Image 1 (cartoon, rainbow, N blue to C red):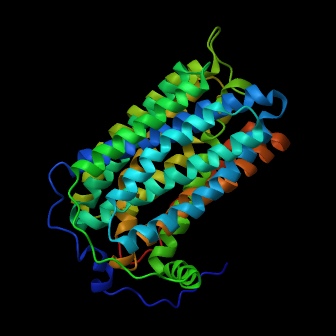
Image 2 (image 1 turned 90 degrees about the horizontal axis):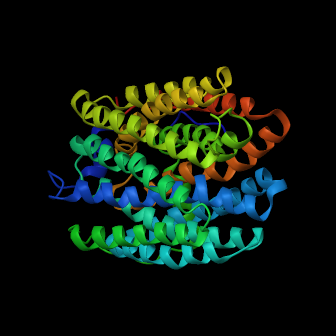
Image 3 (image 1 turned 30 degrees about the horizontal axis):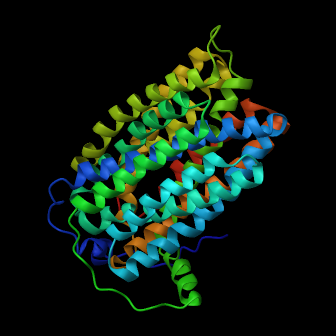
Length: 419
């Protein structure tokens, strides 16, 4: 799709319109709650997506595991793409976030229990679709807390609190998945309970100022509103940049277990799940360091684009390491560099995108639209990755992930209203 450059440059009032209703300071305890809520969410996403789901599919269809994982992951991500903006729009209409966080979090328990109980590819796909649906209700609402309750000057720090949830959640998710590798039901249930507990904490302890509820909107108007969001010049480029980088990231990370099983030379006696249990915490520590530095520093320098660009470019470089060195040492180096790069991205990108939202009153809806840039690439990535691996092998997959990450870095350059 050709991107029109005729959209007027936002005025300062437009740029900060989304901050009009935000308080001067985040409420006490909000940032730890954001961290907790996001850590639980990523624990489920990573534990299921990186360990439990690939193992379950391998158990059901060992000879077609690459294609079947691509199919299940791609179809379920369609549900994520649909439910995220819809749930965001519904929470905008209600004027509340906490009830949606609570509902999505509590429903994660039965969804995960169902996923652990099924034993066919079709039923796994259906159950994970339901899991994606409820988790994206939760995600759409908790993502909207930053533009709702945090002023623009503090969003780098808030973005760091959100970003810290990824490495910590990743460690928890992989450790749970590795510990429950022989008992899918237990692993799924533990991860669902973690999200439910986090939802109870966030919705029960975070203060929410109720916004005016909106009247019902027709489906046609909702579709037009989603399209209108992407007509805003800066918002559109933020969408494209995130989509490209996430596509590159998930094209590789979604197949980590199979990469370790089929491509990487591991030390004698080390299993692929044990290797993942080493690599993921290593990457997570790198993310923690990067997030702790880059989030507050981006506030101090008021330079979001620079950090996003550097992080995406570094992600591209990191993807070359396993090509040059397809062994465990290479994967260790890859995990460190990629962790630093993606941690910088997570620390700053949330702040950047909240500063280019078109309208304050539609913050959750627009964040839901932007989250299609998270879910959409996850729809495409499994199909692309399984095709690339089947036709050209894992080296080509790493190269493709690197190219997409670099393109993501270039996409933030046209943004005008944020440095």
